[in-house]
Length: 240
Image (cartoon, rainbow, N blue to C red; front, side, top):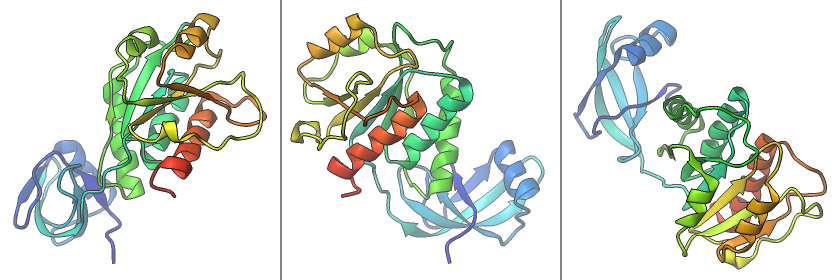
């Protein structure tokens, strides 16, 4: 039976390997989950798969786990980036969490002309990505990159990475995604105010970009991220 407790750690994992706990992890395991010496749980670090481990020491400010055996190999998501304009705090958190659950390999906040969110707290968003991976059974945690201006990102865009530009002006039936959007690829979601005409023109000139409709209605940015990832994963990802 799979453990009800999954924990991301940044230490190496292997048979007999001991893993010291940070204070926050100890509080979660022993204060919240009521684990005790002998309790079994699952560990992953994004590199060496998932491991069953046992609590060997428990304390209020720390503890020690011992790896027993590998229970699942490392499973990498498709080579897909999610690019999104940050929005209100809770909804940005939602986008990051769902991107992890839905198999994005990298998450990049982008600042557009109509982005109305302030500074992006990457460390906090990365913590949300870790929590999402713990909850969804993933063995890999995608990087949440530092926010970058859309113009700067497109200026250095890699020629071999297709860009699925989700254009809210293209209302209509959901398309069959073209073969050009196979990985390596990226999905671009705009801000609540949409893209500016200048940004649309810039994207139209990018050889790797393909403008795609997300259906007959304009979607909120967080809904659009989920819809776009679903559409891409079904066509070219690991859902097929």
